[in-house]
Length: 147
Length: 73
Image 1 (cartoon, helix red, strand yellow):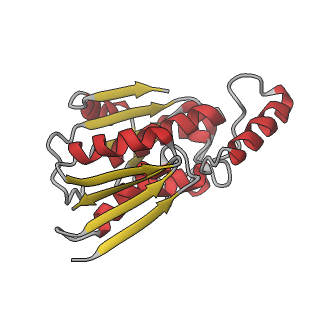
Image 2: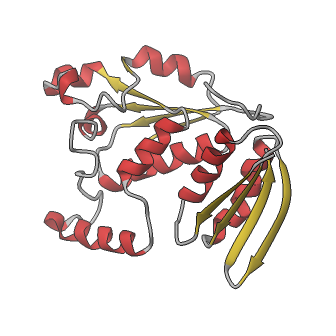
């Protein structure tokens, strides 16, 4: 990874994005972007409901994890987020890629849910993988999270 | 030596941190990056990122809720 500022202790963060909930996908990208900004290497592993957010046009489409209320809750939360100046998920995802973050898509989830590579945001995805890649990365990580 | 100025006033977590990092990646060694913002926690956290990146903080200033941090790449 391009790391021109030679950080003292770069470290590595490995994050599983299992949830496709709007607020939880936000958490994944905020933590991922923050860790990259602070000099870490970061990988996000999208699996199960998380992977559905990587389908074309679906990044911002997840329900709220609580008080979704058929979309009313999400509408209210989004309004407050805009007022607070929170960046859209699309921008956080672009920044994640620009800062050298890697996004992995679980190929077993693709089989289960009948998702083909052509359905997914290939502009965001670095690689398709299974659990072995996650374990290999996680065992040398200083931070690993399951969201 | 160039001076790069970024303005993240009104932006919230994690944008100020991300924009500092993006500017530092664009900067050449010796360049100065100056960031101005209003998000309170970022004023504390940008110096943590600078330390983690092994870079030099030049100065910080705050007036009326708007802070400015200068960093040498």
